[in-house]
Structure formats: C-alpha cells, structure tokens
Length: 198
Image (cartoon, rainbow, N blue to C red; front, side, top):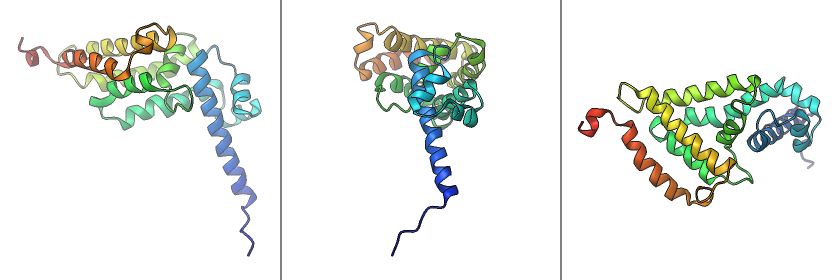
C-alpha cells in the first residue's frame, strides 16, 4: 500500500511554518549578537537561508520581527514564570545560555538593542515595564517600583558585564555562585522596612 500523499496546501503550510521559525531564530541570534540597529534584514534572511521578501511577508517589517522575537522570549517568560521566580529565571537564562541552540536570548536582545534607535525602543520599553510591574509586586514597601527598577538595573548590569563586555571574573563565573550571591542580597531589597525589623 502506498503512503498517503500530503496535500499541496498542507505542505506549503508546513514549509511556511518552518521558514517563519528559521527567520525568528536567525533574528533572535543576530539581535542578541549585533543589536537591533546593527542587524540588517538581508543578514537575517541570509542566516535563515531564505529570500528577504519572506521576512516582509511573514512579519511586515524588521520591527514586527523584533516584536515577535521579544514576545517569544521575554514576554513568554513573563507570562509563564511566577513573579517570585522571575528574577532568578531571567538571571539563570542569561548566565547559562550557550550560543548554540539558545532558545531565550531576550536579555541579550534587550541589552544590545535598547537605546539604539526609536524603531526598537517602544517594543523593548514595553517589555521592561512589564518586568518592572511583575517585580514591584514582590515588595510591600511604598517604594516597590523603585526597588523593582534597582533589581532590573542590577540584572541588566550583570548581563552587560558578562555577555557584552565579557569582563572577568564575572564572564567565567559559575552560574550557581553568581545566583547565590545575587539572590541572597536581593531578598533584602524586596523586604519592606517592617520585614527587616526596622
């Protein structure tokens, strides 16, 4: 008995889905390596092994592609992670990611792209505001939003020093050691003054 053939429309959908995924993965990696402004549509298409026109067909623009990359990484992490685990999850994903096959490079995309052009700024600012809102809910202190901003600044600073500047000893530090030191201190930041016996 001969195997059932796949209808042409189903084959096209499967190919379109695979092409779309390759474009997302290529964009994720290039935005993480070069930043938004340093990444061209041509380089994304070349890395994905497709024609540039397909990028515009599936995403509309480079910014549309950035929005989906951020949604796949950072926004997905936000929605799937309990707030009390969010900081550690973001920190660990940045500390332990490998260049090969990394699924979540949203922190690197954020670090290399924020402030580099108005086109990307709105999308990335929204991601930062959602993270801040989730983190602010962890503190009962009246200045919880400030504390959340401080936590984010620390996270981004660690990311900058480890992945962009590659400064030792942080660049080569064991992820568990970094997490232990950071999370021990972070607990004090979330605590309201009354929680610390003040």
